[in-house]
Length: 400
Image 1: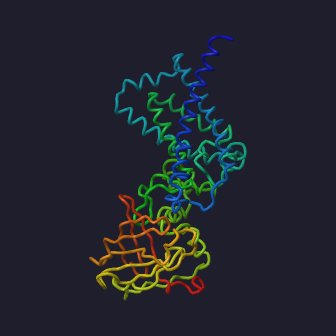
Image 2: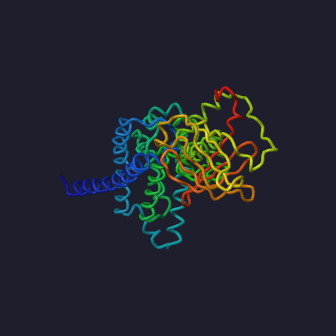
Image 3: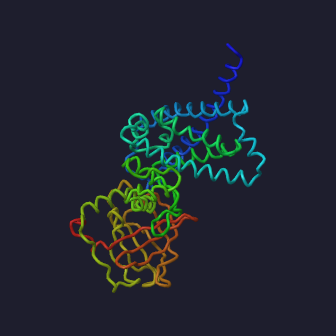
């Protein structure tokens, strides 16, 4: 066997090994952190109630190894082209300085998003879907391991971007390495099944032009929408962003840990209400008239509020009913859930909220917004909001 064959095989194995390690670090790492270590903490931000079965995760991992082999083969060809003088771009770019290093990385990410959007839409054509994209969409409920779970033909289409870029745009190899890290990080996070992107107070994504896990999760659930990989602008420009994207994102990102599974209950209540209008806000309500029973989203629980401690200007609350007792710590029912809130400038501030699911405490504030009560709880720099309604305001069939 010629020596160059052995050298090439060894180089391919080394390259494949590096790519597998990079994939495993992100895919297994995100699975371990979100699905295992922080499972209880992140449960309210789980996009879907159902969890993919273990068999799906194993198949996805094994199929991903096949895709990595395709990527590594393309990478080996590129190194071969450079070694024979047919890929001068990296050497040219090395002399263009740090400014081009940063610019080429940004441009490469933006160009890849464009390439992905249009090739992704192309392989959704019914004449190509079964041959190119069916394997990936067998993961209707995705996991971090779905990121590289491709048919061989789709893996080849995805791999083709890098040589096209490297041939046409002078780019150093270090930029390619950073691009690959960004690509696998965003890909595994986008398939993670948990909404980790922060939200604004109005429920919109903090950076709305960046795709969120919810954005891509919708694509797996309803394949005709949300083709973008990193950014939302192509979907919005071409009218392919799901019309309910922001509502579904808000349901995942703004769920409070006070109510496990609230999103599913909210969906059930919306279906029951149909087109019925909710009771209109009462302008006569004031910030100091909160005494009574309040329902949390999805009627997951009922909290009884009333004055405490120093009197009318101090507000407390106790958990008096919960939809599913298994979702709270034993002994939390009929215990204080809110305490120490002082009325100041129209809001109840400086109080403490106790999460009945795990007993953790949060600093927060409460205020009336028309007929609804808004709560904001913070732990360090991480905050979340929730909306409650008076139990007496709910349509009678929901509370019987």
